[in-house]
Length: 305
Image (cartoon, rainbow, N blue to C red):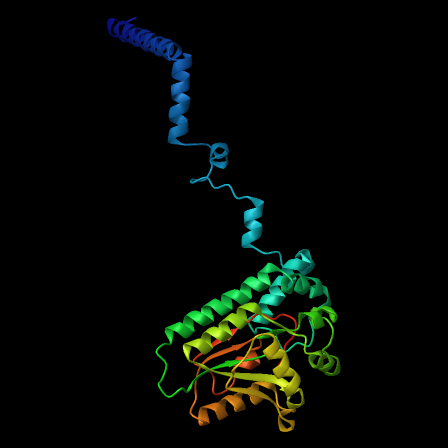
């Protein structure tokens, strides 16, 4: 072999040895780095740099919100929910509120399922408390209206039944409004003259009179019951009203709203200023020639248009 060829062969062998040595050292260092700590660091760095698909699926949204089934149901009412799920007493309390607020269509009798609820209310302390509250607010308004005019023409209008006098004994015998109203039976009750005064209304009546108001009693009772009505009122402590107005024959076919509006207009034409009006029916208070302030007493037993 020539000298040049031998030199080339030796150089190639030397290069091969150096390359093999370098690979062996690299492998040793790699093995040295396969410690638990290094492995954990590697996994951690890999996960931080590029999480795999499984990790992405198990990531919780931020912020974490736990939604309870009851809360979801409250926000999204069940369209198939049955009104029968509401307790009867709750439904009847809603009915009574709607009746007092004049939100019901004209009605003729208390719903049969609510007769017990109405009975419980009108025989309870709650009814008496409601009546007393109306009377207190009425009296406060009357005092605030002072001083009255010097001409003696400031008036307060009162209804009679379920406003000044209570007919609860009659309605106790007739389902507390659950029975259809019978004029003949009620007239028989009126003719007995046994209706008791509503205590808070009697107190209010006397106070507005003492303050100088002229009191007008405007009732749906017929003119034929004038005598027994006067006697009943006097017996229960009501005296010295300016005028007691009852339905004449020509008023019988009129609604209470029309009839009472016409009578208030007559008062105004006589020069009276109607500052207050108390009644248990909206027909006592609404219509024309209305008072400056009206006070509605509770009565869930009947409705008069």
